[in-house]
Every structure is written in structure tokens, then in C-alpha cells.
Image (cartoon, rainbow, N blue to C red; front, side):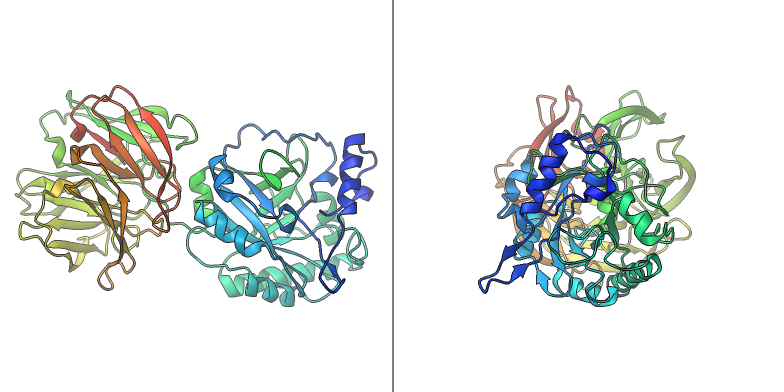
Length: 540
């Protein structure tokens, strides 16, 4: 591991000195031909001042993760995920000659176990240009825009002991260093369309860049082993990730994210599913028999008891069959509308303009006429992945017919029609639509009478036949299909499997792997005492 830079701190406590000395002994490893292997590693936090050496996660930041490199060897990513980590950065490259031999296994293992994963590059600004190192990095970083990959990261800090590079600034002037960093981040944006996550420490950045404040549009990964992130480098008013210690209960350096799991998913480019509040995780909604529509805000996902506040969002619905009520995002703003499939055949929508920060409904719109059949055959789901839910008709002849939503609520929504299923003559309660993969497009789900839950991956939206592969994702579900729901409860863009049990417990199975493996990784009770008609309980 890279030695802690002692020049940045006047006095270190004894334990810090021991830690730094131990790191210095690990300065190089060797190849089979005896040549030194670069050993740079994201560990600048020991030079932040005000040191409080502790591996305890700081309070107030429930979304935790790690950053790792070849120094950790083989990592059991299943155990990392089970311990609650939600993200990781793994070293991919250094300079233009070194590829971390553990990167591929780390990146694949993290993603296979449901973590958001990113790659980082340890900079050697004295060896080659920023553009050249960015190209070398991206050629090996396995960056893809899949909604699970974090922005490419630049580790820019002190040279590691034994590297041969001049410390602290690699022999570059502040102007030269700023140009090098600019060339790197500009090249990353050119090739990926993404900003660069910049990992650094204020005591390196400010002197070595001359307090350059022009990089604040890139997310900051601050390194500081103390009780707070402290003063941020020039140009940033907010940090995104904080490396708070270099060891702990999990492999590698210990990190926290400054936001919710939904925010982390957005950072990775996920299309976050809509909700009543618009913040990602689905709220719990109760259509009470007294006509009140009562919502429980989901403020914690599955990292604690989800429901943090209660809101009445409707009155006078006592004479409405709950089977006629839907919630779906029709205008693509991330907040679900309230939809009434009325007995007279009109589909009436209430636009959600305020979420749960006020009375949600700001305007009303008729979005359908002549729908006098079974309301259970009318669905709304985002099939094409544009953020606006399509209108779906489960026809009596077994055809699943979709009306593309091309205009939202600023005009008549439905612009084209598409047959997306044939032979579906079973009970319509057994048919569901939900985004299981986190790519923004809803999968088709069949709750089969034999107890198998069978999913059809949506790989094409409405630009072709949507369904590209099939997956069994549940067995033994022979009970009432009306007690099964799919909704994104933890805010990571992938829908959880939710069971409204007959004993009144609402039981959720976390979806951490989508359809790239068995989806369900942990189980959570998220409701008690819900013995009402399951049709009155929705997640939206």
C-alpha cells in the first residue's frame, strides 16, 4: 500500500506512524523477471490533518462501500455484499504500463453481487500526458453505460514511496499539473460522456494545482481519515464519496457515499424508477375503506424501516373499486400520477406536480375513453424506457397491446400501437410489468399457476419485439397472485419482489442482481398488520 505522506502533517500520533511505516515496506512487488511493479493505491487520507484513526463508519451516511486494488488479493464479493456494501472502486491501471491483475475479478465479482462498481487510475503525471494515461485507463477499465458502472476515477495524490517520482507534485508546476488533469478529464468525457470522479486530498490538491477551482463539475472523492471530510479542495463545495479510513471490517479502504441509494444509482447512470415523492424508492399506499388514500413515504429503502412519514393524498374514494386505481409516471418527471380507470370507460389522470412535499395533484387529464371492460386488464408500465409509462391492454383474445406514450400529459399521450404478446389468455392477475434489471424498461412477468415466476427480459423496448431472454426467478408461489407485487423499494432502480402475506406481514426480497443471476439476495419485513384486502395495498 502507498506510504502516507508525512510532509503534509507536522505531527502524527504513534499509531499513524506505525501504519505509514508498514505501508512503506509494501512499496513495490516484483514480476517474474524481477522488475518492480507499480504499487500506487488510493490512500491519501492519512494526510488530512485532525486525524482520528477509526474504522467505524461515520454516522449519517448509510450507503457504504470500499475501494480496492491488488493489495487485497482475492476478495469474496458475496461476503462484501452480504455485509451491506453498496459500491466499490477497483484499481485498473497506473501510468501507461501497469494493469492491475485483480481488476477484472474485482469488477466482475462486485457487479455479480449487486454492487455499483467503478474503475480507478493511479496517476503518474511525470511519466506521460493526461490524455495518454486516460486512453490507457479507458482501454482497460471495462467502462460501459449499464446503469451499474460508476464514473471513471482519477486517483491524483502523492507519489508512492519507491516510485521514483518527485514528491509531492511529481516535479510539475501548478500550471502544468492543472493542464495534465484537464487533459485527463476532458479525454474521459470525450470517450465516455461522463465526468471523472476525482480522488484527492486537500493538502495535495491545493498546493500542487495552485488552488485550481475549475474542476468542481467533476464529482469529488475526498480522502481524509478523520471524524469529518474537513475542508474540501479548491473548487468543490460538496463531496460525493469520502474515504474515511484505510481498513475496517471489509477489504480495502472504507468509504461512504454522500446521498441515498437512489442518488448512487443516478451517479451510475441508472434510470431511477418513479415514485410518489420522486426520490426513487417506492412509497407504500393504502386505499382505505373510509375513502382516504394514505401514503407512507419511503425514506430509508431496505437499509432500515422504510417508512419515515405519513401523508393523506386523496379523499372521497370510498365508493371506488380499488382495482380501478393505478399509479404510474405518465409525464416522465419521476413522480407517479394517480390514475382512475372509471366505470364509464374514461381513464382519468391526476398530474403529480408536488410529490409528497405538498398536495400532489396539480391538474387533471382524460387520457382514455371506452375502457368499459375488466379494469384488471388495464396496466401502465414504461416499456420503451423513456421515463413515461405506456398504456397496456391485456386483451381477452390473449394479445398484449401497448400504446406508446410519446407526449406525456402535454397532449394526447398515445402516439403508436404495438402488439407485445400473444396467447396470454390466463388470469390477468398473473401478468405483471416491472423493471427487474434497472435499465428503465419494464420486464414482462408471468406468475404461473405451477408456482414459477417467469420473467421475459425487455431488451428492445418498442423498437422491435421487446422480449429477448427468459428467466425463472421464483418457485413455489402457488398462492393468491393478487398478493404479489414488484416495486423498487431500495431505490437502486431494480424492482424488489414483495409478498403481502396472509398474516399481515409485508415481506420484501431485495433485488441485487437483476436478471444476470438469481435476483433475490436478502429478505426484509417492511410492514406488519396489513390484513386488509390486498387490492387496497400498492407500492408506488
